[in-house]
Length: 124
Image (cartoon, rainbow, N blue to C red):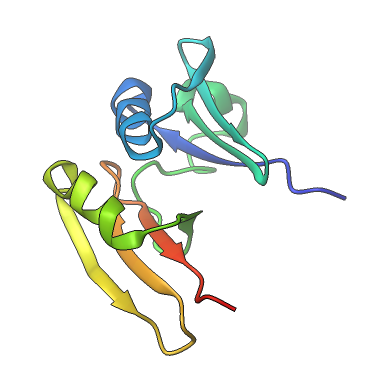
């Protein structure tokens, strides 16, 4: 079994796609206006409109209410990425910090309030 993707359901696909395009420096694949994907070697981050999950009912998903998931990106230089992105980030949770286990991390929220972690691992 392989993890295929993590999908964020949102009321505003275009806004979230613009954010993640700026974050990753990659254009999203947009097979439909209600769906986008950022494909990487390690998995896919998908962004989809509430319309894509309407069959699940009104209470199945609540966009903008995530309090348990962190979307994580492995980067080479956390401090450089933080400096590049600082102006576009509205909610910084943690400035670049070396964690007790050695990772260097910065955490912030995307426009829907989802927590994003950019991190690098310590040199071996």
